[in-house]
Image (cartoon, rainbow, N blue to C red; front, side):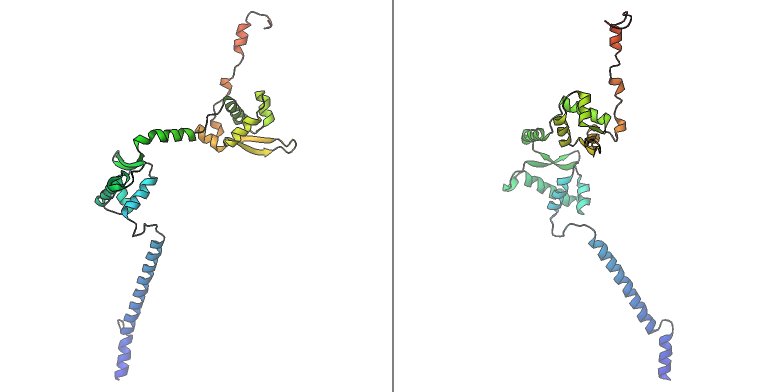
Length: 239
């Protein structure tokens, strides 16, 4: 009787077996949730815990193209504003050569309510000279004229360009190809002549989205009216 009574009570709702099953299910749910959280955490880029806040801020400021406020920097490195302010002050002192460190050619400066790297004013001349040396040389008049012919008549071959300009254009075409402003489109199956078209780089340089935005050339052409005016009064226009 005692055994039967015990067996019956364990099968009732809330018995020991059901409690054990409930605990097992609850444990499995928590284990799955923890595994999913860990998986998400693994795929979330985060700075290494041992990376000092100074280095994190330095990396962010290195690629920032606009001044960054302390609040924005704090949100980026998940740090309070006071800690970010102290770290920025340390970086400023470090780059300025305070306490025996090497004075950098750039400085961390506060401008417009934010912080950003700037070249030191005493090195402006050096940077300007470098930029001028790296700046591509302007196209010659011949190159501009050839580029215009390709833009309005493309696809077009070198011989066709030469016929329009009445000069040899081999060297100019090579220059435009080297600059990436025109490119080879296809080769004529019958003549073997290469046809050239303008490149996407030219559109970028002109600030347009397509060749349809090129200005109409007809208003720029001489319609010969001046010649007729000069010959006015002559019966057939001949001198």
